[in-house]
Amino acid sequence: MSKAAENVYSVLRQRGTQKSCTDAMQTRDELYEVLDYHKYERKLDELFAAEKS
Image 1 (cartoon, rainbow, N blue to C red):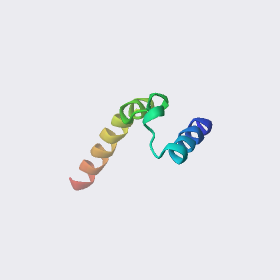
Image 2 (image 1 turned 135 degrees about the horizontal axis):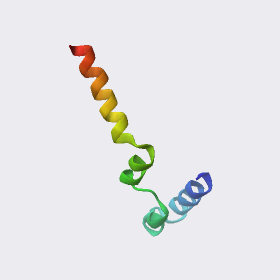
Image 3 (image 1 turned 180 degrees about the vertical axis):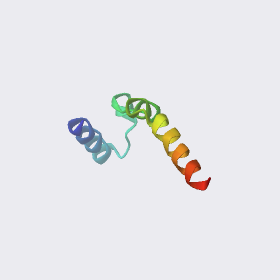
Image 4 (image 1 turned 120 degrees about the horizontal axis):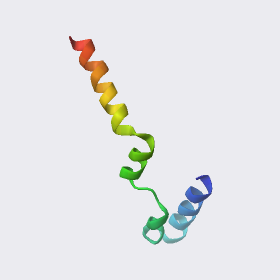
């Protein structure tokens, strides 16, 4: 992961844009799927709803 990020930063420095390497980058939707982020958000909503009651 760090090597991939390093490559993207190198491209940004050289070209001023990441357009040529976006296929190697993860989308927000892909990240959320890996992290199961929506489940985490639902749990937070449940916890905060319980505090308001």
